[in-house]
Image (tube, rainbow, N blue to C red; front, top):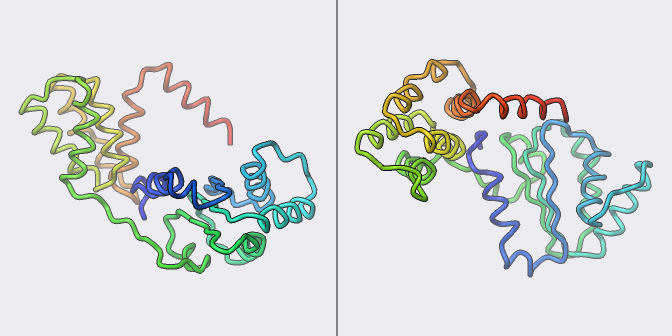
Length: 233
């Protein structure tokens, strides 16, 4: 599904469900992103599994430890935000994850259907975008919820027009709702609705523009904080 469509959120709901906790002896969550580095992934899985830092540096020893520990338990492993579509790389990782007890499961979240195909996914779930009404519900909760401001008819009208620009993506609706929660003036809401940022060409209309608007309206010290964070992988 598209970025901001709720893949990670849905996986988190499953991962943290009490019934899942009871069903699996071991649960591990690893964020992959664009850096599909096999040793890094193995190390991350081991650290989630052991609950401590992995001091091993030899890849063969890490692979051996991973096989040994997974073989002993029924596990749930979530590989979140996977981008890599190189089948050869996946073939190096897949054998290491096949040794768990019967009933062990692996959940992969990805924007790429090819990743699902390479992994041999069983009944992949393709998330669809939200309806305009559902997007409005998310936006409204953030913008007006918990007594954040008066829900005037004019702001509701402008808000619904802003929501139309979200592309059905929940992250965009929530980001914009949070942005508008601190702005109560009609002029401020119109400025967001009519922003030139919406006209920027993006592969995924809605999410990038919404996040850019949220960033642009941050206080200067928070912008500096975000920029500082980009220095780290």
